[in-house]
Image (cartoon, rainbow, N blue to C red):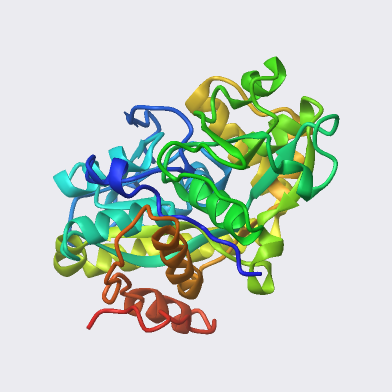
Length: 368
């Protein structure tokens, strides 16, 4: 059963000219903010074709490549005298808007905002240039009310946002059970309750929801409150992999500053390599970055299981993005999109080849 991974918002979010998450993703929070941390540049470091590169990402574990790469100076090392300027966002639409306006050049973002941003601009504003993370999404339920998958019927299940990646995934899964739900209202055999990730744990504690289909670390926060993981979305995908975070770039920036894009991609590849070789150090680094951004680190009972459920990789898992689009269309949240050209993996494959790594595939969705 090939679950879904929605495009972050279609009609409703489409109007915003972007989409969400969170991550995210995705979607932990609200407004964007400039990160006070700006890496120091050696006085004799050679600049690339631009003085500064502006990157954006979410303060989420699924965006840990960016969190750790900035925290450990791995991006700055590759950029030399070109300064990296980070900004953080809490919703896909705001990051897409920042990309469109030129406020950022490169961003880490979930599949739905990327798809929506690409289709709304008729393929003219962004390209996906790399993958970053897979997994980290779970259905967590109240074990007193829901003991098996069939018990989900008739219950109230939260997702981060109408039309977001997890929302579409849940709607697709519900459909595969043979149940009916109106995608717009969320009413039907299952009540889909769109709830911001920041307040989902409190909603769970109060009993206003019976469970949630959410990304990390929200899923592990619910488990810490007594919830039980009923389903890991990875189990619904071939090889247990599906894209949760991509790297996108402004097409104009890619055209004018390919050397800078390649440097950021080298930093991303080296960061993922370091994360996978040093999981405990990387986890601590990501948590330190989160503490600096939010003022509070994640407790061990939350970050430990959350970290284990996320895979950091360079492959964008393009075939799963295409499937996610199909799931959103099936749910009635998206018109059939033309995604050909959404990927340009040439810079990434150049970096991977130079590093002795296997090149990655765009599933036929690369630049024409």
